[in-house]
Image (cartoon, rainbow, N blue to C red; front, side):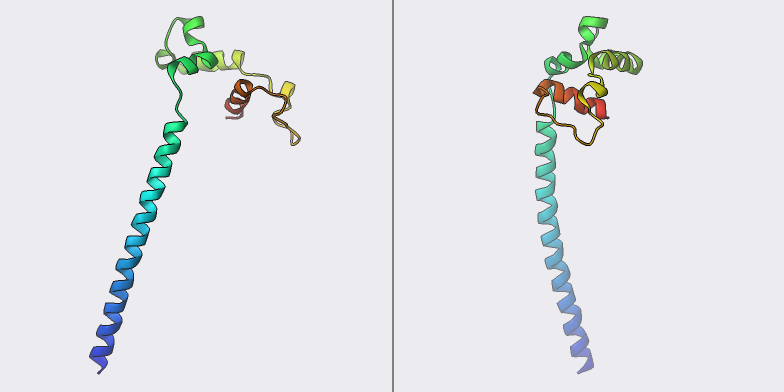
Length: 110
């Protein structure tokens, strides 16, 4: 009787474990698809990158070929001053900022 009870518990836990594994793998697949979709939509083309960095205009190089110090110098010139748009203030509002300048403000934050 005790062996039957132990075997029943073991088989019950085994089924529960397998069921939980299936649910977790489905959730992970959904997460991977969502992450891949976000990565796809967050990429930009080289032309869009040149509108912000302007490495071809200033250095005659593609952004990939530039050194980090050159990129930092260009970004300091191109990005808006945070005090002009009150970027670091609690009451910052993006209503007065164009969509393109809002992207630049986002880069400035990081």
